[in-house]
Image (cartoon, rainbow, N blue to C red; front, side, top):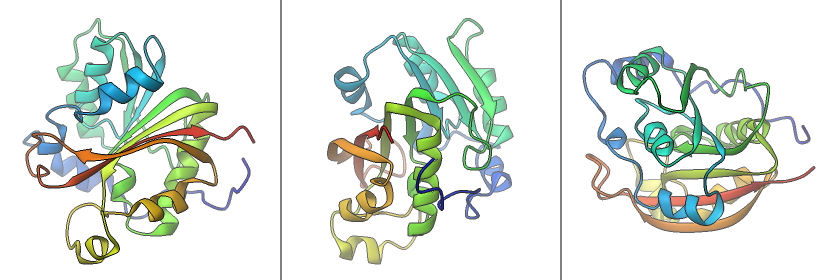
Length: 213
């Protein structure tokens, strides 16, 4: 891969902490798929195709994709999340789960579509955002798509004053982190719908295409 300086596991991510998050409850953000996701997929990546769901959590979106005729590989670095996702998923669903930190051990074969629902926005620094974007590029075949959903800051002031939760980024900050490897095809600002704890957050929905080089 070109521009290979942004590699290696993300130091800010801790599987044990996320195991604890999934121990006793369904987090509010994992109760239902993001509201604009279906629209983006219909326009840019209609079924049938193979989707890699990165940071799949309890498999909510993976099962939703399978119900809509997608073949899904879903991964998370939390063993607890993957165990619960497998328990909740019907045996005949077209979903395969893996415990995997994609920044350290990406899949051997790239995918036509990779989905990141709320993973990039856990990266607090520009360097870590670039590390994650580079990992997404390794997982996405040339010309393939990365679909990102995450928290958005509408102004620099919003980003500076955000004190807890995910790292909110402006559009400029987001683009600076990802455009070494991807071209932005579609960028929208909306919301996360009715998901508990995030109803008042602005949500960024982006479709990016992997560069051919």
